View 1 (cartoon, rainbow, N blue to C red):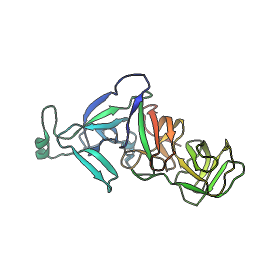
View 2: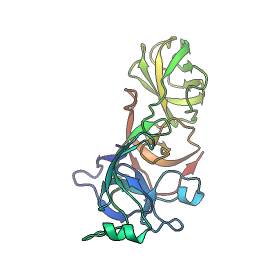
View 3: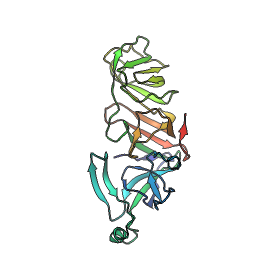
View 4: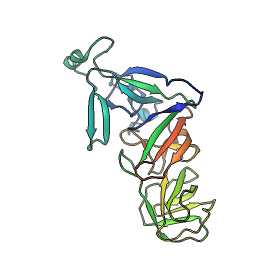
Length: 267
């Protein structure tokens, strides 16, 4: 699934969950923000970084942890890159009437685990733009004796994020298991200031993601069901990363908490 509950920084205690009427069709695991957008009529909408500047700047509420309404269906769709329980948005009276029930509006409802700033821990997969696309592996084409330059095939990655906002990890080679913060980046080269402990040689395999331990930026996948780790972080949400794991292809993930609920930042 996409976003999920990973704990509470305040210690023991259950997640805070609230039920909302949806303003668009949603799946379990999708990130949601406030529903204040023209004409949708729901409490929440997807936090999918829409082109609408106003929508993109709305505060995050949390993520869908369950579907409450009678319209729920289970979907495994390769086309949409989404899966799980689904709540279908409707603005049609006949559909609302068919799905209404005790405590239900009939218009589509989901349970949302609230993302309380610097308290709720959230786990999310890290993808290349859309759900299910693993981050590209970067095979070294030119070795580097000082352990600072990761040179690979041109245009192998879209993660050209600068200024200590991304992380590079060695999956194969003498430096396997080591993470470093990227300080300079391009489509075919990442440079770190703190060197890897061993020489980087041709054939070594690295992976880079647009997230970093501590304060960092988070871009969201196109369907609001994970972190987009292969990007330039031109617009992003400010989060605090507690854990980043890039060990296995297709299973990369991060655990984070929101620092605040304000609009996106720009660098």
